[in-house]
Structures are given as structure tokens and as C-alpha cells.
Length: 223
Image (cartoon, rainbow, N blue to C red):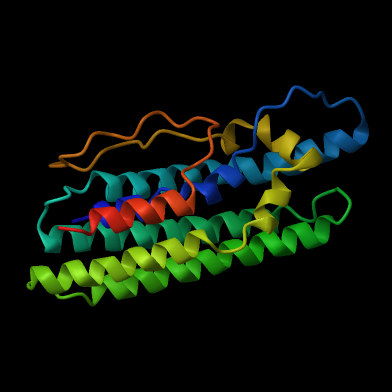
């Protein structure tokens, strides 16, 4: 049953990956680059626990038994949505608190990224409220409601990612890629009683696209 959310969530790593940078071999040879590196360190030092929280929350959804009890799925997913929302708010605060990035157009990049993260946090809290109101005593109604939640997840994944993409481009992206705090992480634990296998070790490979996630969600909802 929870396969619907698992499939829809597959694009959720985009937000984390946007703060995880990509490989870079450039060096910090001048004062300008040193300032950019300093900004990246401020953000990434605070980002690590939030990236970990998101990874754990996503693993909770993935690991919740596909044929588990509605009440168990409801509780696990509700907490996961809350955790992701809290992580996104904290990431937004970290970016805001680091000050304006010392790059061209840095103020707009910062403002857009903070707005984007706070927006997704609000969207996840809305999903939490939605799943909290589902009738876990009626399995069919719960399954139908879960599909609506999965649809909501897909909408979140299609939200404009341009602001966050700017963070991982150019000098900022190169600087953040070097910071341990902005690297992808493994979930720290798998919920007890889970029938699913842990996700493979994260890498710099891109997350599944919303299109493929939508197709998977649609397929999993069929009898």
C-alpha cells in the first residue's frame, strides 16, 4: 500500500541533492574563492544533520511494509512528513543565517533558495495534515486517500527547483561540493519490523525523475 508514497517520494531527494553539490576539482586560489568557501562551510556545517534527517524520513516511508497496517503506515508517514518539513525549514534558516553569498546575484540566489525551502516545508506539513485525517479503520478508503497523498507528493516534486539549482552551480556549487556537511548520506536506521530492504548507498547520481515516479505510483495503485 505504501508503494504509492515510495514511488512518489523517489524525486524527493532532489532538494537534498541540490544542497549536496557535485564533484569538483577546482582549488581555492584567491580571496574571492576563499570567501565563497567560507559561506559554503557555514551552510554545510548546519546542513548535515538536516540532510540526515531527510534521509531517515524518506527511508521510513520506503521501509514501511507495503502491506502493513493502515494505522502503522499513517503514523510512520505522518512523522516522516513532519521531519522533512522541519529539515527544510532548518536548511532555509542555515542559508539565511550564512548571509548573502559572495557571488554575483548572491542576494537573489539566497532569497529564492530560502523561499523555495520554506515553501516545500509548508507543502509537506499540508501532506501531514492530509494523511492524519485519513480513516485508518477502512482499508479501502485509506488506500484511496493514500493515493491522493501520493499525488500531492508528485506535485511537490514538480515545484520550481531553479533557485536551489543556482546554489549548486558555479562557484557556490564547487565550494559546497567540497564540504563534508553537504554530501549525501545513508539513512542512519531502518524502522523495526520493516519488510523492505534499506535503500542503496546514496551517490551523486540524480534522483528518479518525477515522470518515472508518477508512472510507478500509477502502476502500484492498480490491483
